[in-house]
Image 1: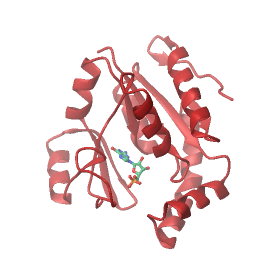
Image 2: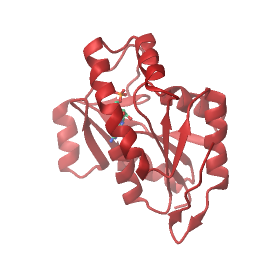
Image 3: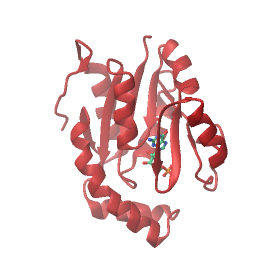
Image 4: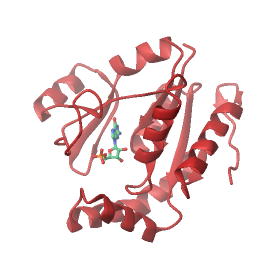
Amino acid sequence: MAGLLIVLSAPSGAGKTTIIDYLIKNYPDEFCYSVSATTRKPRPGEINGCDYFFLSEEEFKKKIAHNEFIEWEIVHENYYGTLTSQVEPLLEAGKKIIFDIDVKGGLKIKAAYPSNSILIFITAPSIDVIVDRLRKRGTENDIEIKKRIARYAIELEQSKYFDFIVINETVEKAVDQIREIIRTYKKESGKITKREIN
Ligand code: 5GP
């Protein structure tokens, strides 16, 4: 199994999706994306099988019962999970797989693949920048934004479990830092060496 699992977690509005889109679009031979399953309803423009596998709660629970997930979580009252059938073929093919999943999910990925996982936490320069980005995105109402901000403090606290923290000032700079992390990371008896990134 020669591939690499690169978990990118971030509070909503930190700019993670933009970074992932940039990585996949500009370096398609280097990176691929792990498509998660969810019971959340598709947002305008989202495509089944591309952004997520959109499942009913019944379908999702059936897959839990059949042990088809590497990890799954309830996030913002919806189910989200990483399917073994998505990840294993890509790992076998030696791909660098990008995971856009929450903090708890990221830790479970690392527990399942300790010697092949790099956990990178992305954050915005400040909470004001996050609120501003969420408002501009316009896909969440005020109640939804408040819920995500409440979760922000918890997620930030959990960033201590991550191997690296990247502060997203500009997408280009963040992407450069992520590629540099991947280029230079070191494995020592199955553990990723933690390094400071500025
Ligand atoms: P959204 O609904 O905005 O696409 O995602 C909401 C949250 O669910 C984000 O924090 C996202 O990273 C997380 N998420 C997406 N897919 C997965 C997954 O497969 N597993 C886990 N644990 N979290 C996920």
